Image (cartoon, rainbow, N blue to C red; front, side):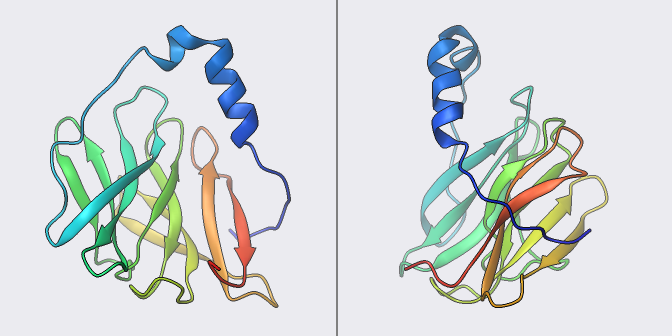
Length: 159
């Protein structure tokens, strides 16, 4: 699997869908019970189709990115560490079936180089997807229903 570049932003379309279907948007809610150790903030960015898996990332007390995480009702919040993840392992999306997380992984500093990844929850395998030539970073942002297709972006810096 390789990273491919495309343009566009789905935020307004997703927001419009939530407004058009308010019952669907409010059907299930949850509260993340705690933060990971040594972190002061957590952001949820992805949720599976049935709401059973949530993913996101944490911020360290010093302002740098901490580990990404996954949350399930059964296991609670679990950090995405080891097995190919670097200290900055932010998760931005999840497949509809909840089996694949996507995001970026790199050193823990705010604007350090990072590479898009695809993480298979069942096998624990992290697949880095590379960076487009001429760019310093890549980020997986969303995945298809079964996680076989990942979309994202390549860019120079957070600034």
